[in-house]
Amino acid sequence: MSVGFHLTFRLRDSRVIASSVASRRRIARSFIEIGDRYGLLAFRLAGDHGHAELACDRAAAGRAAQAIGSSITQALGLPDGFNITHVKPIVDQAHLERTFHYVLGQHLRHGLTDDPVHDGSALPDLLQYRILGSGIQERVCAHLPRVSRDDLLRHLGVAPTGLVFAPTHLADAAAAVFALPSLHGRSDAQALARAAAARIALAHMKADAVTALLGGSRARVYGARDVEVPENVILAVSKGMTLRASLGDRLLVKLPAAPPPSRAGRVSVAGVGSEV
Image (cartoon, rainbow, N blue to C red; front, top):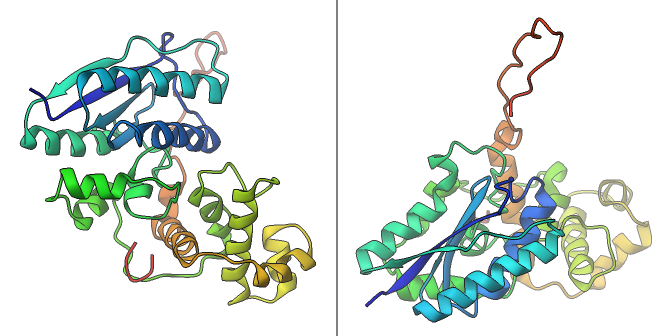
């Protein structure tokens, strides 16, 4: 008898699954939208593979693995699909908790620095700086009642103590709330994210400066005042902006120094609120 399952995903050619912010956000949508039907508790990309934890039975875990893999392949237009997903049973409550932290801690296990804001993990959903209409918070509370906000912040690596206005991070934080590649587009989610960003910026800057910051027209910026933006969206953008400001230089991927050219002349290339 199992209390859940641990899924491991890897592409057939073992390439890095997501090499950009946009691709990580598309993948997050796949995990959340499909995982909500199968008891998703956590997920995390880890370079050339990914992990997920589900509270469901074996048959449902198999269906989830197939659906998530297919969704990611189609969303990213990948030339090849996933290997047969490794599905490992989780045998008891202690194992469920260990697996949860194992999945979310993949960046530490593998020394990853490409995703400091965790676009490719469940942490934004659990800490409410991403809003995709998911029930993952409630599921984690129900299945893992001992997991605390402090536990989640330890995986995040920072613990901001108050909201800050950091205009250079505003647009990206607003787009990330809905797992969007950017604020530029005509979808309802992009319109709402732009309105939230403009509302926040107008509390600190004049309209011309907000227009220069976010793009678009001055009329659109002023019009944001009339858009009904839920308070949880405003708070999520503020949390994401504060997180990015708190990370500072960690938002930049640090690469090792390039080795000297070989004799053949070739160069080898190394591979918010009071609460956030």
